Image 1 (tube, rainbow, N blue to C red):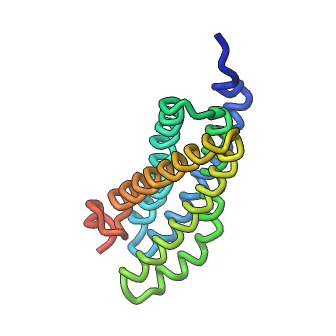
Image 2 (cartoon, one colour; image 1 turned 180 degrees about the vertical axis):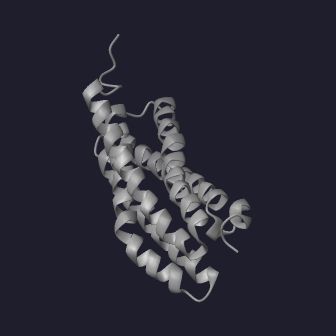
Length: 188
């Protein structure tokens, strides 16, 4: 029994992996920039923490979305979902890469740690919204009937909420400047 293209072909998988890794590597530059306020160790921690938050959000919420779509018998093109997830990572990473110089300037020159953290959060939020928009356009375009479209959009909104909470929690835990458990290591 064949249900359609559920797993991308091998060359497509490689392309999607490269696309996602480009975004993850680009996001690390933003982590370096926001960690510069507190020194080299903090830069390294932030350079790893920012991409890990993105990977955790996409890695946990995309499979959950596929399962949820299946449970409610909604049409979903899994290849489009994975392509959209990889492109969302790339879009978010590129946005963070572009925001890195400004984030460096703001976080290093800001008078208070709270102001620096607010600038970092603003950058992370903007990049996350751009990535969500990219995923929405990749997956949302595959809907068929009006009822299925409404339910699918509700599911996507739930996916974005879950992904946002996962990313926020991961960043709070891993980024010292946001005051999480690692704050004794990097930011004071």
